[in-house]
Amino acid sequence: METRASYVVVGSFVLALIAAAFGVVIFLTRTSFEDAPKTYMSYFTGSVTGLQIGSPVRYRGVPVGSVNDIRIDPADVERVRVIMEIIPGTPIKTDTNSTLGLQGITGVAYIELTGGTRESEPLTALGDGKIPVIPSKKSGIQQVLASAPELLERAVAISER
Figure (tube, rainbow, N blue to C red):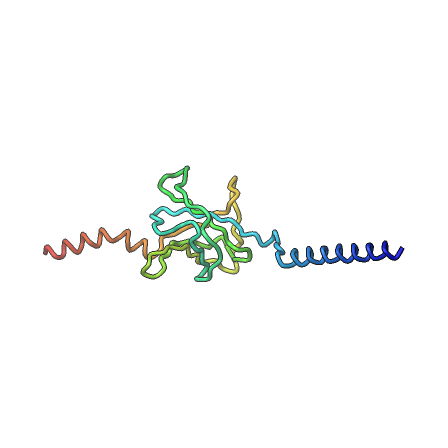
């Protein structure tokens, strides 16, 4: 009977070791479904040159997510639809706006989220839309580029005088 007893002890030890290894793996690779990124959408009327899938999304300069999809809006061909994934806990409010920013002289584009006060409500999806839409506005760079032809015409007119 001593032989059987040792087989039971060894088998129990091996099973306990496998269970402990499984527990360690689960502990090290723990994932929480609550920490899944939240999806938001924004529409831009101007050019989004330099913006790519995977470009950063920043909230007041702090990296909070990335661009997940860029497409021309099928409902309005004059708009570009950008879908972003933003980490939970980012205070996206009803008065939060998105703008397109350029990083340094390289021209790498990113999305900058601004606004959002403590008093405003969290942004939620409206109507049939399942994805909340963050309103966009033109950035300073886009406004300068949009007014460049007019400035050039004025410069030419002044030089002709």
